[in-house]
Image (cartoon, rainbow, N blue to C red; front, top):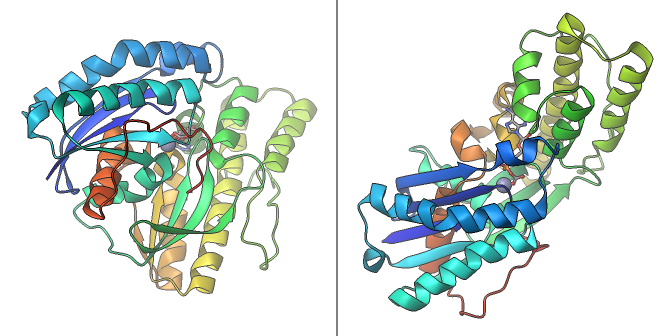
Length: 332
Ligand code: KG4
Ligand code: ZN
């Protein structure tokens, strides 16, 4: 079964062909990071315009690399939400046109379901039930997954997503957008205990996160001590990173205990973070949980994860009409 996945929800134009929901035959990502970097964040209008330019070449390349022709496909999957409305509409319009022209069925996919199922492209992937933490630029949510297609929200951020905190802290430290990777790299040289940044919502009764206070604490640190450079900058990055990884993993372990889970998946862009991966492994081992970490390139946005989720939904009988519309705030 061959599925073409198309992703244009934010600032990556991506397409991939996946076989049997498990094997990526191609996975093409055209990033707009350089376009948005000078503004310090994603400009929706620029994102839409660039998706229009990139979407057909990216799809052509994905089909070519997979050595697949449109008519060979069994299903076309496209992200229909959540994300930027104008950006989503570009992928949707192309997917609908290809489906109409070829007669290949169409399936609209939730971007977060794509993140949760990206692990299925790895050789070692869990079957449900498992717990999945989606931790990205727009989302920080813990789901219980009793079966494919059923996603129960256990906890979520009350304000900023973890990736958003990374991006905002990077900005106030004068680091490039997106901030995750530069902070991660600088943190390698820093002392995670140098600054005691706060952990919010520490109560064991609460399964939610809050990262806006942490961001403000970094701002106050910079206002008090000046913009850090050299070792001081590395220490701020390491201490901030430790606070994020500590908060994320503590609550995930709490959720796992409450849900009686035995398997855990981390996914989304922040799941590429080196400290989060290491601490999650440490705490999962302590708790006797089997941890699944997608390779880093499957953590950030890509078309293969949309193809996997689309193939899985198609197998369950899900089909979308040509009236399929963008759902910018679609909750999983
Ligand atoms: O999943 P993704 O590509 O897009 C969304 O769906 O949001 O995630 C992007 C986010 C950005 O906020 C970026 O700073 C963060 O993932 N990120 C990281 C790392 N790599 C990317 N955060 C921490 N450490 C990293 N190594
Ligand atoms: Zn994403």
